[in-house]
Length: 242
Length: 236
Ligand SMILES: Nc1ncnc2c1ncn2[C@@H]1O[C@H](COP(=O)(O)OP(=O)(O)OP(=O)(O)O)[C@@H](O)[C@H]1O
Ligand SMILES: [Mg+2]
Image (cartoon, rainbow over all chains, first blue to last red; front, side):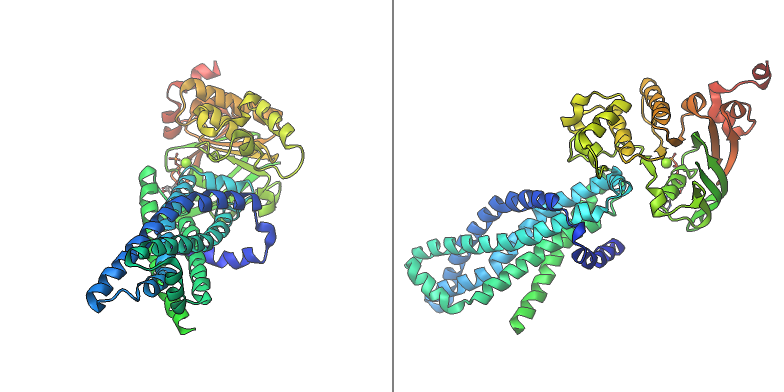
């Protein structure tokens, strides 16, 4: 697996400087199935996360500080910097990562990948890069959408604590900058890019039958999740230095 | 026009799989042997999926290269159709230029399939039909050599006969040289003009079907079973 992962990572710069390897039809297809296909579930999950986090913040602040004045600022900051980035990334891993790995692993054990190669097509060009581009774009876009949805839900929830929407936004504005949103989108795109890379690295190494596919899919999802969490730590540290 | 193996030896770790293999692929060559004898490894050497460790393989007189490999097509044991594409896209996938529609219909005709199936998905077809589509897909880029890895394993006797007839038909009409890896001695005796037996890392018997039927090698005898011909009766 590690050798496969290394060869993929080495091949990416080659792909970037050889635009002829780009397959736009497959990329658009991947964008619509992977990106648009994940929109609903991510919107729903982040909406609830927004509601929960606002209530939680209010409850804790009431307990500790006997005041809810900081709720808009704290929840908005937490949403933009972490919640609306991590939740869609982890959902993408479980939804897109699992389906991609299972698909590629099945192609591997049924000789479809060898068939591609023998027809003169680089399997990475056909299977990885369209999805890599799609997931990178979708990761960023879905993060942006998640931020909007989660903030909206947080604004709505904050009304229960007597913050009107303009009040909420004004208070939140003190704690947030445009760079927070830009950094969130960069994080989202990075986590999106991890998913197809890990799926291909695991899928291409799949052996055995249905059991092998199941095992590979689990391994890939676990590894991608860990990667997202570790990278989240690294990127957060890096951005905090800026 | 042939593929020649000269002194090919292959080992995986300490396990020797092929040892000093020499043979030439003629129009319709069958390679038979027990499971695990190294038949698929032989094909994978030609297709470059397993690197050659010792010896050489020449194709039309020159050492195998990525360019010359494009003259070869391989039909896998499983149909290996791309299951996200319909039959048309599967067959047309390897076509780079030209009138794709015309070529796909021509190929379907070669493998004796109805043109109406082009819009179907692979899972809508029977196993035998998928196998035919996979042969059509391999024929699409006009290979000069066709390699088959166990084309009839797992098929009933009727389907086995249909597929082996199809291989013969394709070899004749498309003028391709075929190397068929198989366990199926019946098909080999019926359509091959050269049969090789691989056992214990070596070629233990080789010749036309009649010579093979007379072989005294125990493995060949075991394979022949009911196809065995007593040498006296054969001479008579
Ligand atoms: N890539 C590989 N790495 C390590 N060992 C391998 C590899 N490919 C094949 N082998 C080993 O080489 C031996 C021959 O394998 P091969 O697949 O050629 O057998 P075969 O004659 O095609 O058998 P079957 O009729 O069952 O398909 C087996 O013992 C197999 O385990
Ligand atoms: Mg085999």
